[in-house]
Length: 217
Image (cartoon, rainbow, N blue to C red; front, top):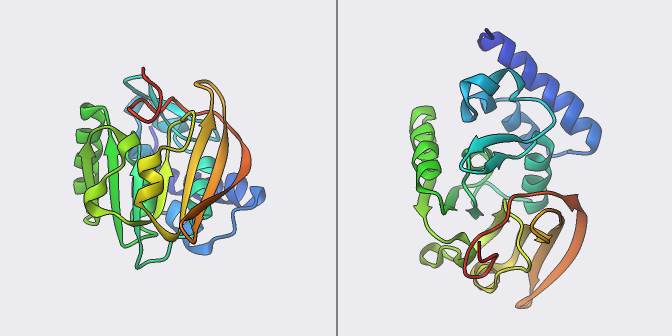
């Protein structure tokens, strides 16, 4: 059974070995990921491997992304502390928690109600007060609070959903896996003069984005 100090050591090792050595340079982000208790976002049975370099199942056919992918996607957004970010796919809530420490406001959409409620409970337990959670079709975004300085999609889509492009602010950035249902390319898009300019970052594998502007099922 691990104690608080054990988890602290595992977090520090995760930052040093998985993140820094693979090119994550944002000091604030590294500090945040060295503090957030990732083990609380997975089941008790999986806590011993919560800081390992691979995704883990969280139920309902969904996963928590490997720490490096969380760090990479967050760093690509280049969020500032006064900015607003939209997350599509709350899942365990771990990525949301990281965003909450790097942006002023986080809006997150999850289609599976049980996951959304569980994540919301964890945010309250940990005292994260700048997160709003919605149950719904993430491919449609969350227009009520648009525009967003950053949008992060933690599920693979055949294309970038049009509503998300519309809800992105000028000079805003979106990070999203694009491709087939089983493997994708991580795409970074930046809105410049109303047009989305994109580039491919790396290959990746995410669960599919189910919704009106994603996959049907």
